[in-house]
Image (cartoon, rainbow, N blue to C red; front, side):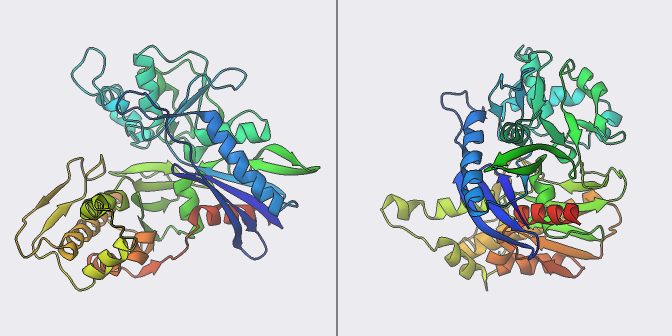
Length: 437
């Protein structure tokens, strides 16, 4: 039995054939995610939703040609961002991406950022019930900006880009999986937090019906074969399900973005974000920990002069890994918070000497910062750790033994390393296998 898995990511849209008997992801296809629209103000990041649908259809059609007997389609998608639909489920806005930073601009008539204004509208209890989710590109932040600027039509339906794509592919009303409702669902009740919406001035909207991971929300007919379609799940949850994360483990993911997470059987708020997991469970997590995106800034600096001279360094990352193998930071400090993150928004390099400012020293200092950040963020999940093992995933751990060594130094628990490269698609495969039992 074969199914189709589609991952609507922020850099690419990727799909694969999910072989439920062998448990393998076969024959992957990929295309770039559409670029953001031009001529927008600084900090705005909008994408044409129809372009996303078209790119997804292209990947899907190639996969269906390779697996014409597929029986269902599973989706996962980037989290955050928002898209508004009318009563006929047609877009009345572009897709406002999770990368959008407009909520960091001053609120109308005030000196504070609009994001801070939004936070002030909620009580501590409401914020806790929302999972303490509030980032510049989160759905509530973007909806609040639209409302404050009189650009939020009443009775429109807010959905994620994944919800819209799935509804278009299977010609059905949009449904949202709870893992995508970050910062919008009352985690105590499992429903939309209408009181928080009213406080934020984003009430009067038509919210989509929430779906579970086992519900069929529509069908696609391909060459006379009907394929069952399921609501898109959050890419973080898909990836962690793909690595078989258990409630007794602490997940540390080291990739372009980065996070620490633990599954909880009941709603247990901490000094962290809380999101919906599967089967009515929850995920305590700290996201936006500086990692690969910030390391790329350092690599770009180091290779700037060769590029200017027309010299290509295709193995720059391998050279960096070799340089860190036997080096130390030697007192050099490198805070990777070059972007708004769980560790701040002001990166810096300090304590430079003529001896320690080397490629190996700089990246060792960066790895020290990353390992320290993971340890600090893990303590935000729970005052007393309830895990007995680490589940470490992401390409950076495989690429840099020096980073792996620093994690082992700082954490006292055994480490389960996951080398799986298709974590999100594997998560979809495992969900499909569970449903097929």
